[in-house]
Image (tube, rainbow, N blue to C red; front, side, top):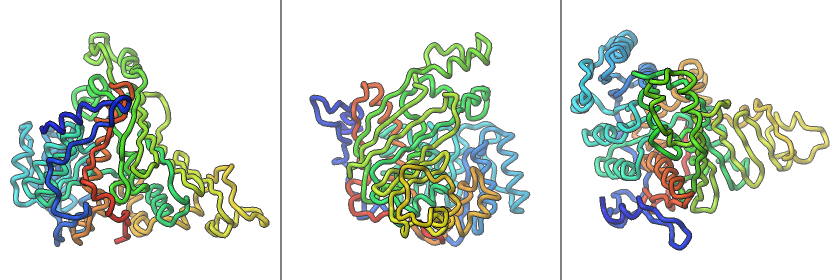
Length: 467
């Protein structure tokens, strides 16, 4: 770690001192003048999978449906999960992939990465393994596709960027929400200027996951629950933030500048443990749950725009990602989807105008339009129009998982840049350590590192094509 980096990790407040700046002067400039990176096209993609539990097994299932994709290797130290995934792949493809980890060897994934029969790796393991496995995959010559969040520390964020640049391998965080129908439609609307100039966004991951605490010895709750006891800040920022970052051209004409964060007291996990587990259970043995139930961050962008980011996996409340945008012409909000604009009637889709009073000259921004059918008809993203019907039938989370992996497969085979770069993985994941530092320092502002080394200023906005 350089002295510049140490200074950054000990960020100070704006009061009495300038915001701490991530040290990158010690880093050589990347070979490319743009962070939009395309690898050589592949005639087919041979996929390896590390971790095939609830999430990873779904990825295997989807990949088996994609043209040009071959599942060649699977690794998991949980023998039943490994067998189920291997058997599923053999049944559906007629080819039995190599299996690694059946003996419980925690390092079996390293042996798998040495295989010459793998072009790209999907990593669906506990959070703390994401960066080490992605880095090792790239160094082994494989493209790395890693579940969210991609990294837990700023050091890990930089490591992903540095290794991706030095190896010429993709490192994409598998943020599936960017491929949801609503999110793609809103991206299309933003590109067409429907909301005007964007000023503010709101992103969240509000999901009551207390039930995962019943997964004591195996499953997501077995490794995720301890984080609520030891960590602080927003532990899972990217589901809501990823789409908003795309809407606002983060790393493609704009950039995260700094954030401030605060957390509520930690109450829900202790109450849930007391109500559902014996007094001597290990969850009740935790004397203090450090992580606040609700984390709220405010992010300032280089352009001056703002984003509110919230995270809450503990409180008893309905699911939401917010997915809110405020522009100079109006606003769009999610959960439930709704829109309010102040524009001349002729700027509205025909289906929306048909609902208005005959003499209406403008839309009404004082009331939400919650009938989204005519909006989808007018602004459904071309990619969703192409594969959405199949995705909704076969893909997870309403089809977004299918669309994401279909798009990845297409980009790799055609040698096109991915929609989500390693710089996105780093910037979006950086909210976790920065929100932790801010919350622990009385909501002191924390400066985002510039993982693109200034190249965000000249990188064009993202345009996701249908092919």
